[in-house]
Image (cartoon, rainbow, N blue to C red; front, side):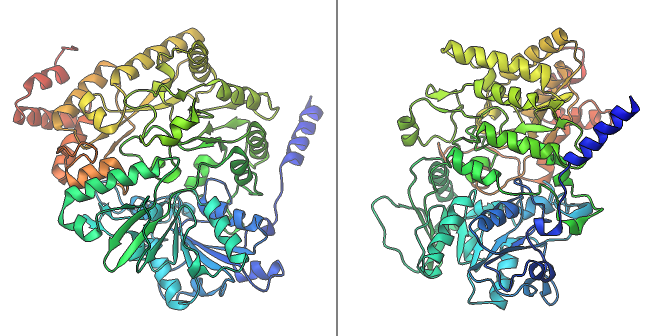
Length: 622
């Protein structure tokens, strides 16, 4: 038996793929020279550590450019203080510099919802804080333009993407112009950047000058003047929005609708003496295009320079596989549709299985996939029944306030993926760590096939793909708050919990359902948070996954927070804005802690709602 086990262990070690430093994109002059290169085509600067993985934007763009035959290097987390040596060390690229702040908006990365400076950074080795500035999109670009004023700079990443037009900045508590008004970048790529960056390179290599390239989809640029067309949407100027919050609210509706249309229009916004031009996005990527991106030769590992250090953001996803892009949920507080769009692009089974096999060869893999998911776990291959209807649609959500009749929400393809993955010899279990949309599972489909697929998926998910805890996001319990969130009724969550508990009993499992909730969302008052506490208490929850609403650029909820108006109805909406108002709401999450009981009772007494206090702390469960 011992000889057999030793043989298995040797076979396992042999299956582990080994890498050499040249398998990563170069990050230093020494690494560039080791490849025998005497020049670089593109140099990328990133606010994150360099993890060569398809979940990290700098790696995706770097590998995409490399696949076009370009010589590409990455400078991760450059020192922006002192003599700027990190910005000088690789010299000047032949085509352009690329700048990304990282996988998160730098201000969310740096500060809590209460604007307190965070003590760590999940995208930095050993969580070390202070490795990037606030707004690196602006800081890095200004440095590059100071050093090399004639070399084009292309700005990308989620920070720039969501700040492409006039936006509210929570951390400065003011309305800021589109980021190109402050960053001297020559071009901004918004959304997922593979297609626009490829098109840019093709045109440059065809001999077009950088300054002449103005019509690439999914790009933004500044112009002194513009020749307008009949299809353009001219937004209120930045200066008008500064003077009138209602105009900012009206602008947002156009911005959101054009971000979620198959055939969008060009947006124009006067900002000072310049015009910000936002070209319409590319159509959704095809399966083949998405496969090409995920099939690039990633090592899936941090650069060797970080040996012996832990990068928490990588640890979270290193044994996971993303199977699709896009989300048609349209939640009011979420930035996914603004960045990835609402249309789902899914990978082929072959591409997914190839990556799973790659994961199985990674150091430390023990047979358990942490996630087979996406922005929402159960939207794989879902699309409209009649694409012509989808092409004309401008609704931000396909499932709110109800599931669209044109939505072909079939879970069959997803079930097949789970089965194919679980057949692989190296896989013991595949778990679903992404959030699940239970409204898609519980919807009363008129098509018997869709109904049966949803039922089968629900049972398969709960019985075989939950790693002890299943995450879902009801976000609130009160209908009027959920309306502002674009989330379904809490009654659906209660229904899903019954199904979850039933399947657990039938399977002899002891798994937990972990709901996420938000306080201080626009439209939410203290009384609503008291009702939330009462409802969750009745379901025997002591909440763990909670957060105070943080306004982030380019979301519906943020526009309501700043302007006080709902951009679609133009009605006024109450929002908790002060630190005291927000803390007064947040405390209701922790009703079960003895130290909160007195202040919660006092709050409800002040609101003249002792009926709620009696229900929360008394014996009544009604």
